[in-house]
Image 1 (cartoon, one colour):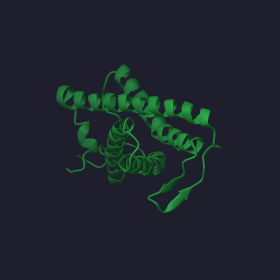
Image 2: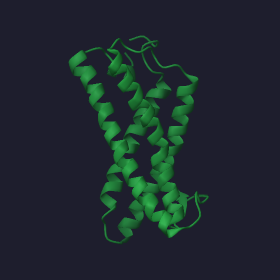
Image 3: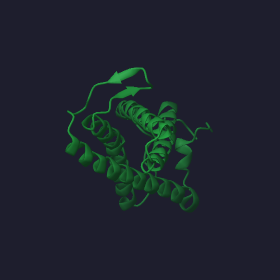
Image 4: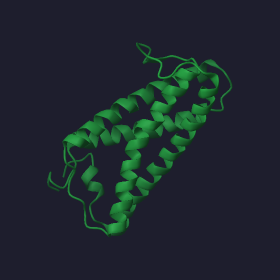
Length: 178
């Protein structure tokens, strides 16, 4: 497969790093949400916040890379499928930012600092406000579930192209060079 039909190596690495980070962070977030207060829960919350900030940074890098590097040409497909694929990608980029930013805002509103990897203290995103923190917790949760649904739609579309259409779409984002 030629470089004109593949994403750049940087785009591929950012795609898969974000995919792993998002799936892992969602899993930890889902697991930790109902844990009773304990040292384990505090550790998981800190890990989750660090991962969220990392996802935010990787998302910014990915968006900057995407805006400065043209993707490969679209594969032939019905117009409705191209529109759905485009919409899913746009929504993914939106929630790549919305989920971690809502988590950061929620954490700030609840009065809990974020110290990225225990080293870099981040400023509060919003002022401390209990009611706002509770609202943002709901927003963060719903956005996370929305992200999960979009990821599932993205994966389903990729698998459809691979197993039904057999059009080589998945090879464009493969970690292996061909």
